[in-house]
Length: 405
Image 1: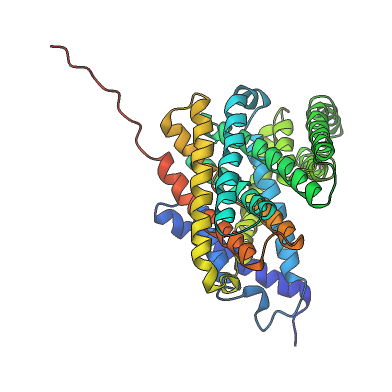
Image 2 (image 1 turned 135 degrees about the horizontal axis):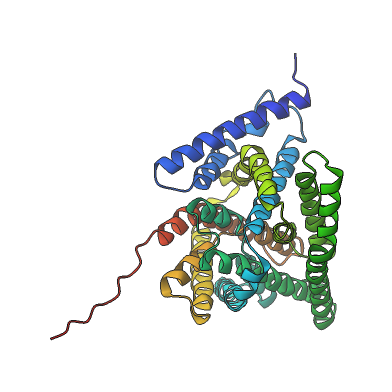
């Protein structure tokens, strides 16, 4: 008797969550962040080896999509929790490092990526699109690692999250210019429109957080609705995530991060955090990290593209690490802190894949270069957790003691 789609989903999620928790535990036993094990087990469960969602007893063609959507909910919760830990004032005080690290963290990999494209014989627009795919950052994995290390609220953690927001802004601005030029539209008008949308969303987010959310918080307190504060926080997170994409043209995770910062201003912060942490870390967040691995299909990466993927990955890692690290140093960070922030910006994610997909659909990137970008995302995602843990646990340099003769 064949299983219903619901039972197929249930057994798949049970396997994913169990495997994620065991892999995370094993990873920690070897001195690595749990997220590293969760990502790796996702690769093993994915089409590269076991192909979990296409086993013989799985007949539901929509199962992949459902797991992916649950994973997307997981990354929203993760970034909401990261925002909940921070305060708007703390982020503002780290504005200089956020801008410089975010800007140089885009300029360096974009420039180096474009240089690789030119060296490979690509035309100007294609080379720039390749560079742009290397410029995007996804800090959800780094945020989880910093949480595990207990340094999310350090100067490095605050600078990293702020730089990621500006990285998102800079990449989207460049993407709007590139797509406008490809479509024959005015680059200047596209940039102006994009800036206005982003600014409008950011201002609206802060105003709602300062004046509207406190009213609803007091109302829920008077009504004494069971778990009303957690339910309201879920609604706020989802609305901010949707608004980030529809109004601001930004990633949904940026909206979830801002929602966490705004909700964190309320007196219900601790109870909301406890509710989200229990819901997220027991269900949604492990699904997200495993799903990142499930999306990776090593069999689709042509052998002839492996050398190119390694070169592009090296350029992507070096460009982001050096660029963001240099920006942090110019903002007054120590070399050790700059190395840590730069390492936290290395991981790529959905934005880089979106840029590459647009380049592929517009005929600016070949299938080989698209596969190369996918390989780069895989490598950068897997090396970031152990690399970040390593640089964050390096001993601080001892001050030199001058001998007195």
